[in-house]
Length: 471
Image 1 (cartoon, rainbow, N blue to C red):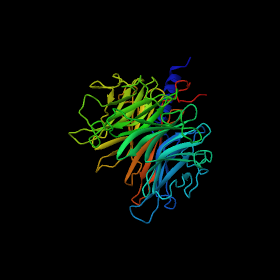
Image 2: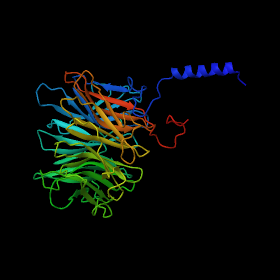
Image 3: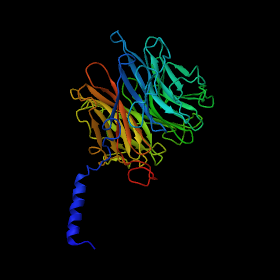
Image 4: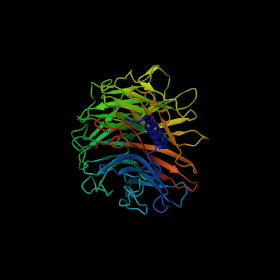
């Protein structure tokens, strides 16, 4: 038994040791083991690029982090920028992977010009296959007719000779914004086909070699007509289900072209036909009945652990002429989940964030294994500066007070520069959160690719230790 003197000394020793321990890390704190204090940059060199912009991200099995987007090549002609598809890769610790790349910027691959006459080509979405190869989609435009593209690259960023025409499939008069891969390795892409000024929501499926899958829709193409009125429809994101059915979301000009839009979502079965058990015969066009908004759009989708569908987008507030952020949740059959969001607007969550912003646009949406939602956004709030911004909600659509500052993360990645803008989110297997975007850290027209890694306890539930790692 310890004497009272020894007990007192032990208590003092414990107090002293506790006072020396730094503050306990919390969800949403910068991970000090990544980059410099949780932040990493990849800076263009004004030779291969003057701007690097990521739109999509993936954590690879070896822990490296891959980004896809566009690079802005230096040009001597004002207002005639040349954009090309880009891949960039970081090591797991936030350092640039200098073993990757084909440009004068270590870690950066420039995708060759798919249509040399066109000045603007960029990757909008990508998926990484089991063998490390990459499929990506985007648009080639300006100077020659608009073309959507699907490309396949190997793990080192070279166009794959066994896919399409030397790695490339081109689709005329079509915008492609999103891509996924099903259980059979078939590639699904979605966007809009343009004909006589009308934009028709379009879903395409290709075989692993890049040939159209004739078992899907009309020789590989499905056009979604929504209410059949012939108005324009747009698809911003897709989800591929385990049974190879596909959920697509975006917006539809239900009031007539040029007169606003509503949220639009549809489900196609594995043959490309509308699923009659979903929504209103396979599709649904809707907005929150509790408001009078007439400009609404789904920008991002994410599957939730209960089999439902989360979405992030914006809606228009007539009185203030603003377009704030909105999140919603649908059941597996496409119906509104009334248990999600605000009591006054069941099924929808309008976060009270960025009060000075005129527009807040969701750039990415992911669901943690515990059902919590993470959304990144860019915004316009002149004259205030735009910073990296992300929000985390509980699974039922309320601010997650355990994350960052009451549920929101905001950080100026360009403290001496013009702006920083979050574009994409990825989750590591250990639950840590990667957020990437661009940061103009000086007034010299150099725009970096900026990355942060945040601590998070949102790892899968089969872990043993509270730090999120198995032994």
